Amino acid sequence: MKYVSTRGAAGVTAAEALVYGLAADGGLYVPESMPQQVPDWATMCDLTYPELAAEVLRLFFPEWSQERCLEICRRAYTGTFCAQGIVRVREVGAQRYFTELYYGRTLAFKDLALSVFPHLLQAAKEDLGMTGTTLILTATSGDTGKAALEGFRDVPGTEILVFYPEHGVSSMQRAQMRTQPGDNVHVCGIEGNFDDAQSFLKDVFESPELRAYAAAQGVHFSSANSINIGRLLPQIVYYIRTYTELLKHGDLARGETFHAAVPTGNFGNILAGYFAKRLGVPIGRLVCASNANHVLADFFATGTYDRRREFAATLSPSMDILISSNFERFLYYVLGEDAAKTAEYMRRLKEDSVFTLCEEERAGITDFLGGWQDDAATLTTMREMYGRYGYLPDPHTAVAIGVVRELQEAAKLPEGPVVIMATANPYKFPDALAEALELPRKDNPYEMMWEVANTTNLPIPTSFLQMEHEPVRFDEVVAKEDMERVVRRCIDGVKEKRNG
Ligand SMILES: *Cc1c(COP(=O)(O)O)cnc(C)c1O
Image (tube, rainbow, N blue to C red):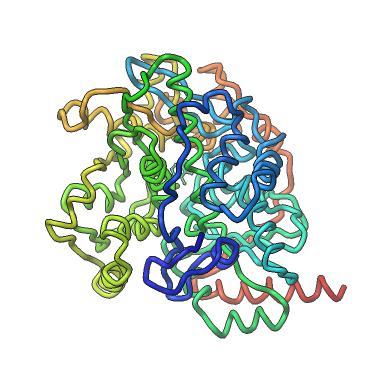
């Protein structure tokens, strides 16, 4: 199967798409056509998670054998998750379910894809006979960075460099990255927000000078951001698992649909839901939930994507994004896989910061509903969920809960079961928990966690208990303009390592 750019560049193999990350014309890779012969997912209730994941990979990498896909998925999901089924589907309230996606090493849903992705990349490099070093460049709004660091830590032939917004992540997210072990990992804070980091990295990928500089040292760039097809595809799996779990426990009859609500930032998670729907999972509406950075909610309401607004730092930092990179893939499908039109809209977005779909094109977005919640509403939802059900969601998940409730109250969401994607362990955000539970504020996030634990009896993840005693390995913070210098330093480091 070939992969083509959303902006029209010629097709490449799956292995090339995995290794390049971004297409040469700045577009994102998508499969040339959606797989046609898809399995009947309903019969897959008894497959293990790695077995199910292998089925999905096979659809998108038909050149790879069944055994190879299974081997990759087994390695990815063995010993890396603390829930037996990898994800858990739980009913909380009538016809409302949570698919809990945070049982991986770094306690956020990013682990689902970033446990597989390094293996996919290794396989792709093997196929292409690539030898040199891969430098994984990653911008993070908080959770991708840590999950990518864990996924790529000490993987041979690989270095990883993560940029995070120094003032735009939670205390625990920051501590997770700054204490990261491994001999091939690099972490750097920036004075700027996530959009700055992400757009800089796009420039690096497109910079012939920097690529040439790297190539001269035997280094090529790749990305662990959700622009990479290797991030997107593994995320389809848990939408299918959600479906099989609902069937298995009699919560859904065959042929019945469910709605899926997703706390959204870069549009990677919800896009995987859209793919799952296209592959036959009976998803009714996809609910795109935003925080105060509600560019996407506005888009679904009006058909206008307008990023001309102030960036807001919120209690749900992993959704603090105004330029959702995966949105381009969605747009491509909405426009009937028309790359020229997609390129034109992306050009308008870059030059004018705004574009509007015409009436006819808007017909393609009716599967989606958008909504948003500010911090005050988010805290109220957390407090109510805990008070009423003893279920304490993290602030991102709480945004989605609030959006679903509003859409239901306004009768915009048709009847039927709703599944909310629960994207992080609440302890990643101790300050928000304390505020929601009205506990006294403490400067030390570990003390804050204990306050929460003593009040709620919710166990603190062991990795967080250990982290308090681990040394900070990375404390560098640079201006945006200096990010290129940090990348060059990393490249030089590879050369020294090889010589040393
Ligand atoms: C990354 C993240 C999101 C947003 O997911 P996207 O795929 O970027 O839309 C939501 N919640 C949490 C906890 C995250 O880490």
